Amino acid sequence: MAKSTTGRSKFKMQRALGIELPGLGKAGALERRPYGPGVHGNSRKKISEYAIRLKEKQKLTFHYGIREKQLVKYVKASKKVKDRAWMETLVIGLESRLNNVIFRLNWAPSIPAASQMVAHGQVLINGKKVDRSSYIVKKGDVISLTEKGYNNQTYKHAQTTPRLPAVPANYKVEGGDQKKATMVELPLPTDIPFEYQGQLVTEYYWKVK
Image 1: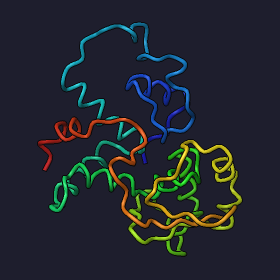
Image 2 (image 1 turned 90 degrees about the vertical axis):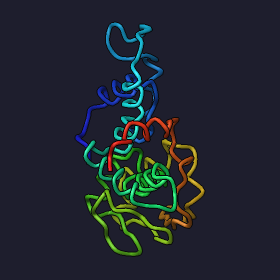
Image 3 (image 1 turned 120 degrees about the vertical axis):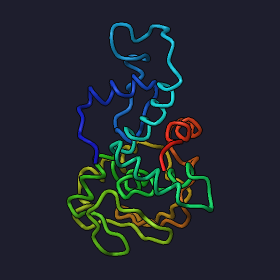
Image 4 (image 1 turned 45 degrees about the horizontal axis):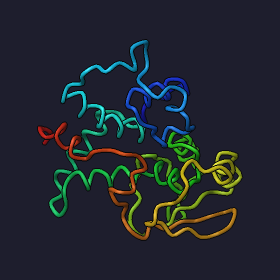
C-alpha cells in the first residue's frame, strides 16, 4: 500500500494532475483551486511529452494507492497475457484489487479506508477472511463483511454518503444493511472512475518487459 498522505497533500496531488481521483476520498480538490499547486500553478508553461505521459501514469498510482514498483510489476504481468491488449489487462488487475472492490461497492469512502477494513480482517471472500488489500477478486467470487465490518462507521458512512454515484455493472449486490456482492463479470477499462488516456500509459511503459 502506498504511503499515507494528509488531506492537504491529497488535494495538492490532484491539483497537480488537474483531475479529481475518487479513490483518495473527499471531493473538492479542484473546486478550491482549479490549477496546479504553487504560486505559478496557473501559468501556461509548456509541458514535455514525457511529463504528459508521467502524469497519466501517476493518476493510476495515486488513485489505486500503489507504488511505482508495484505498478511496474502489474505491467510486466499484463504484458505476458496474450489474449487481450496489455493495458486492458492492467486495468482489470487494478480494478480487481480487493481494496478497490470494497471502495467501488461503496462499502468504504476511499481506497485507503477500504485497505484498513481489509487489514483489520473485516472482509470476506467466499466466506473466508482475506487481509491483503492486493488480493485479486475473481469472477464468481462473493464479497461480504464480518459482523464487525458491517457495524464499522466507515461502512455505514459510505452507505449513507457514497463517494461515487453507482456500483459498476459487473457486480451483483444483494441484501439490506448487511450487503453481499458477487463479481459476475470482470471489470472493464471504462469502469475506471476518472478520465485517463491508456495510450499514454502504454507509451510510458513501452520498454518494460
